[in-house]
Image: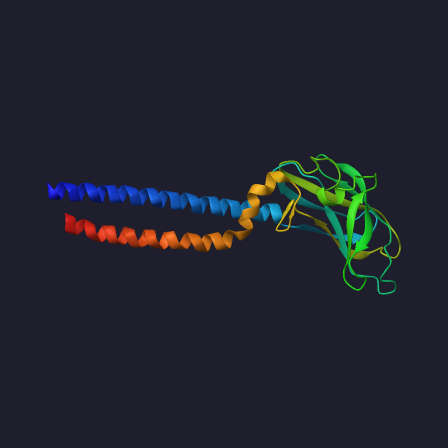
Length: 218
């Protein structure tokens, strides 16, 4: 009778242990998937580009939901006139967007690298600088592409190397679409991974102890 109770108790412990192992493994999978999705949704992609009429660059883009365009132009300052912002006109093309964009006034002090927001030639709303320009589905869900072509550039910048940055919809301090809010906690995935180590170690200890107890019970 005592042996039967012991066997049943051991069986219950094994089942409970495997349930906890399953929950722990599921939490690890969710954390891994969320961390990868967070990385894809929060990374800034760059397009090296020579500021010369006809020059173009293209990149592959991934989005979980339809997204607008948030672009910035970076290039070294002009030593002759660091406060100068020459006109730059570009054609931006995606599967759903074909429009002309221009570089706005720079942000930051003149001595640093020049950073200029790229905005539509047509008048946009005052929130466009934050939420993005162009159509709401300029970057469609899934895998797509973005092509930038220089149309016009003033002589002061002609032939200069530059970089066009495609800003992400998600950042630690910036969220441009509430559909991405579920990914925000995964900025802290390293901390959560460390916390998951504690129950993981405990499960390993209990599993080893239960296996050692098995032969004695037998």
